[in-house]
Length: 313
Image (cartoon, rainbow, N blue to C red):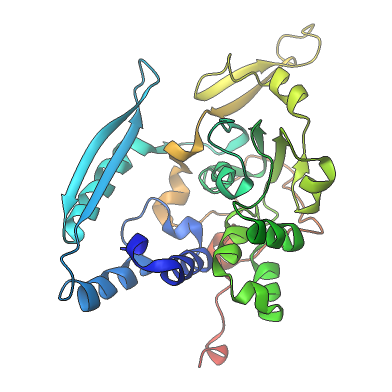
């Protein structure tokens, strides 16, 4: 019922999910945040309001490539949500047997105008990305960070610098403490120093992109190398170099044409809810940069470092 709960409940629920850890939340219908929402619904709403839920499950037609409705659920209890989740796992969830070293994500220019929305390219794929891997985001329509001026200002000021630094900034700055949706977003969009994010925007400068903690990529150059018109969703081999050595002149990438329509995860990470630092096929994992800080909470890939019992009052 988050959408019917107002700004405060929306922001707080996003914050709770972020600090609990995206890797512990995504693709799982049962989680602590859902338990809180279910409790609130049963305790305060069901006896007071005739509240009904309408949920859709959307998927891409593999033959035509068109987006189509695969499920439509109406109900006034948790069963409506549960059934929709079960179908969504079948339609929208991609389980992989090996981690992704390089992911190329395309953000449609008519749909994605900000990193606020475009960062689905990061948090929808993070459970599948290898340690030391890379996400390249082709974003021709991205011209800002936030969907409104205040959120945009906060993102520019604090950046996607990792969970510990964001939580520390929240503790020291009332403007963040009073805007939990921004805090949640900054956590969602951070790689926690585990993999690289290269943003290739159509309307933001190198200084702006690097100022929030991402690497910058030239959109024209990256679109020529990874042409969305020639790629198919999933594994691809693209030509690089001069083509003299056939083996050396190709690289394997995983392409995603719309990150809003799915969730991708390494099988072992999804099964145990963590992302082991030993799963990577990269020989030299990415070192934590000056703007990205790793945490051991939630497998070290974006979760909240659990406080000690002494800190819990």
